[in-house]
Image (tube, rainbow, N blue to C red; front, side, top):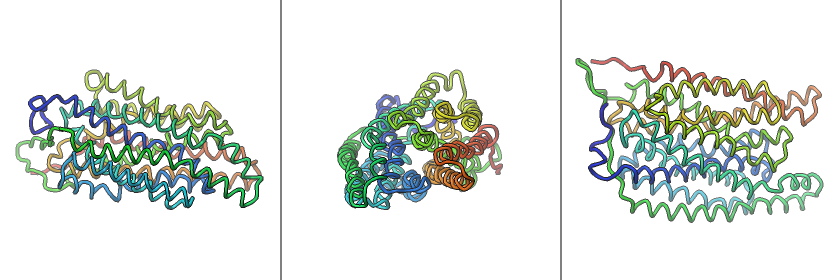
Length: 442
């Protein structure tokens, strides 16, 4: 596969400008995705939820990738990459606006609907932008380009987690103390006041997304198409998406990876709070995870493909994920939190490595393959709530055995991180064997 585009981009325009444009889009959905770390404890408080219920914030966002990925592929086929990116931004803006009536009514399902609509727009945006950046140059260096996207994504996520952590979580400890002492009327008033704090941030977010959705239509992006994998003698061209087992195994690997990544980023604040660490410290914990990812992305940009292959990066990431997960289980307190944050190192290069490995040789099936890979983001909708359910059940068992509430919460939260280990084992399998599997034909 010597080329990845229908014509060398240098004959049209420098690839730097389109890379910067797509990096801007990755910045946007990084910002919106990673504010979930602050939204989860915020929603848990204002809607009086259990741990499992609060992680539906992540589910509402990520389940949209299952519902919308194949329709997004169809839309891209009809209107092209650029118009699809524009439409995705506008849909995300509509989802942001829904937070206004949700806050007024303080109704959890309305919040979840707004998050789902934002996720639908993000699905269209990601289904267009991920394959675009993958095939905007040689496949061997695709992980490097995606790592650059990852830096934009996670820097935005770090900003989002800090900004929304400050806006939504400041003073939450004092409010919780007040809630335990006031009557029902005062309690409702306090919760309504707290819920209103999301209105202005989401109005600003909606305006920015609408403006960017219009501006992206004006941008001149080169047309790119993936090439077919060269056929060996006696082989015939593949006619079905089911003839690419390395793609389907890549979907499974991405599914468990996104689940692991969301757990590392979205549970770390709640985890710190369960360890009785002050909220003024805990609200920055998602930043630790994201900065670990940004550092590793930067290493990937420097090392891939000159010093390190995409496959080696994936193997190393999986092994580190297993080791850090074990360390979380074996440590306590702030040390354990640091190992959750260290998962950012293990997670950073998984997405950039799997995409080119899974899309290699798909040719005309690239858009469909991309949609399937985007559907794998639904791992973020399923695996984090499983973690939350494990925490709830373990906590109930410990309380029933006579343990105090504080120790029950911390022990349940720590021990439930075992769910990460099988996720990284599956990623390691794909790195070692899964990406090599091809159906013979001819």
